[in-house]
Image 1 (cartoon, rainbow, N blue to C red):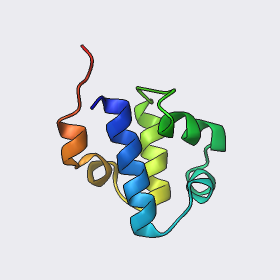
Image 2: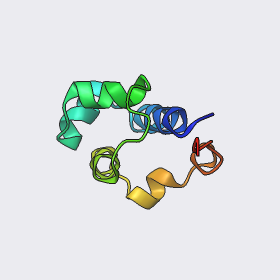
Image 3: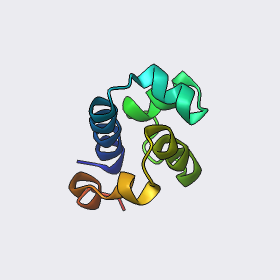
Image 4: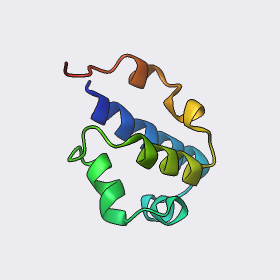
Length: 79
């Protein structure tokens, strides 16, 4: 699994846990729906840290909590 896929799965997992839609996440994060969709659909394989921080804030978790996931730790970075 590559990093983009791992991030997408983590976002979906946290949205389900927090019971918020992707649209609501975009609103809470101050991001456009298309930005969040591009991450979820794999079009944005390496989103900027600032974007991930905004998503984590929208989810009500710290960036450390957001990134603290086995899928992300084990993701193929494509180097």
